[in-house]
Length: 122
Image 1 (cartoon, rainbow, N blue to C red):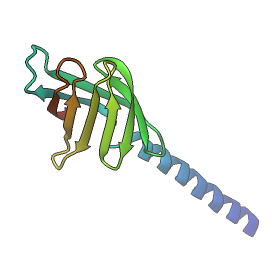
Image 2: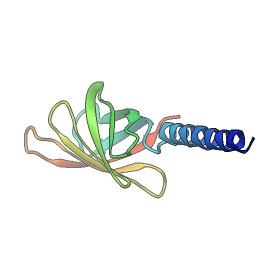
Image 3: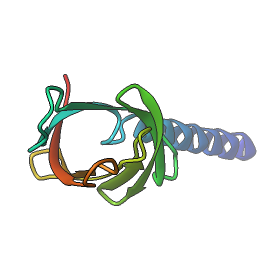
């Protein structure tokens, strides 16, 4: 009887741990669709979209798309880094207003750096 009770307790703890891990992976702050505009870009299309589709359980990497092209995303704390399909580095940090704020550096032309603030799309 005592062995059966220990087994059940162990099973409940294991299941709880599995579901808790799964739930926390599903609710990572970075998951979702983010949109923002490049400030100072002299182009008709300043809008950029980042769609984060998955975050590694360790929390150190994520996958998604930037402008429809697959990207790998590095996560350090509340800062992310990625390189776009056009080889432009992007660095963003989660701000107090729950927006991603940072820079986009255009490698082409003058290699200018632009500010970008992205908000989660509902």
